[in-house]
Length: 207
Image (cartoon, rainbow, N blue to C red):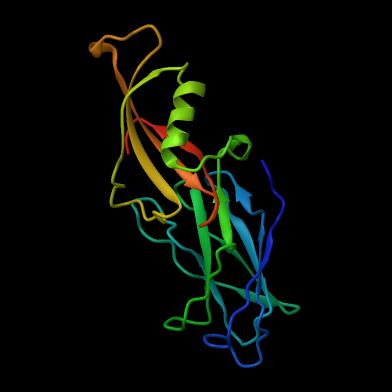
């Protein structure tokens, strides 16, 4: 699994930033790819002031409760803190704010990836449907697709729909074309950034 940290600069105005802040905050996640149940440290530079908070947008704890804002601590000019681990795999944008009620700052490239081992080695595609077809061929023994459609996400799933799509498939296992032998599976496709391609995230028996 990749553990290299990503530094993504964001050019923003002074709205929402403390007086004296630089106009190019930098967010560093260490690591920027984690396994499920593991946390990541966030480091923010280029923002002055006396307080700063961060959170993972769309991240939830057990039961679908949104993860809280984390108060960062400034050490030698760099804000640091450990972000709580989300309960679901996926891609989570990092958001910043000075204090409760202040404007929220975010950038397309400020992303934490919660992936299973090997996820980044899977191919990418233009659509979630192509991801699902890849799963049928490569993970289901070249099964025959019977039906496929996008499926609404359950209420407890707070992940950004622009980055995550759920599909339900009905398929016939190889050599078993009878209707009684058909199987069903839910496939989650994840997008590596708002302008990125789609890849396989996970297959589950329930949404």
